[in-house]
Image (cartoon, rainbow, N blue to C red; front, side):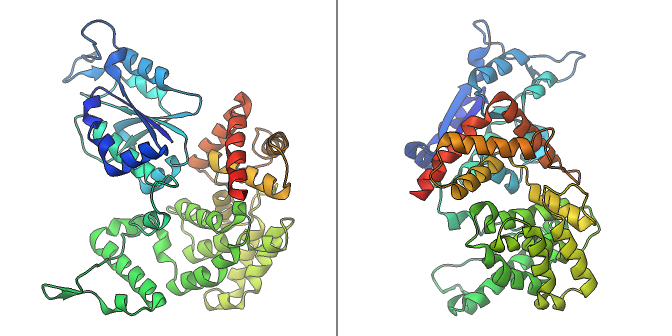
Length: 434
């Protein structure tokens, strides 16, 4: 991954580049970080980078020319440009995950009273790290860089970045180390019991308790916390493990992504969260018996699962079965219920990088021994058929992420950028198979 930071205070990053995580990633080659001094792109001996605002007012604004010139000198065709400003979208852990999939990120640090408004048009997105004002965007750039780079595969142990605060919509559960007793406070005995199932439940209960006490706003925003605990336990133990041997493009990580996407979509909808969770969990399970008509097999599997009778009536199971049947992108008719629209939109998951990766994985696994040209032709044929302006994929619900992702995919297809993406994932897939 490459991260380029445009700033007028490059010296502020000297100690940051020496911190353990950053330095380790730089030495290993996982990270290529470049600090660009915007002043070097300002004309004249005084390197004039700011000026007073038209119409009057306090403070100075960063001028267009030095910032834009520095950006254009740093950009590649794969660059994703982020402008750091208090007016941006608040940075969340899900953004760190999204950005960790990118190859080339440029962060532009503001300063003084802010940017000339015309600079914003040169960014792909605007991000803020909170509703407060700093002297510049240098600290936000460090915060975002570290949040992203620690999620890059190989940067840290995988387990270290999974069970953390915000990953499941909860704060992390309490943890303890030696000594067993300190100033009269003892480590909870259940953690020494060796009963992993009891420990797992205790941790969930304590995480929920801690979140209710310290961040109740998270509970209001994350409907996943309202899922019946017994239903969640059954799904996680009996249903999700069924996907462990499925191909990566429809494996357990894909199912978890669709579950999380579903919960993001329903924050402002009056729907039953248990139904949404269950539908997302079962929607691809029928692939065990083949990709063709798997939505029908998956719906049947859900409907015939008698253990679900504990939580749902027969009428509710019929509704959920129909939602699963309606989720496929190739379906021409709109899903029969809001639940079908939710899982269909969540399953779209139009993350351009992930879509190309999944397509390459599918083609190489179903056509072993194919070369790059064969894989590229098949991927492009599928892309044209599904994601082009005339493709069959439809978005049944308003979803900014999917709309933006689809536009990006179409741009890649038009300008040929997608070929480099296919080459990248084809090489990675071959390495994984060796």
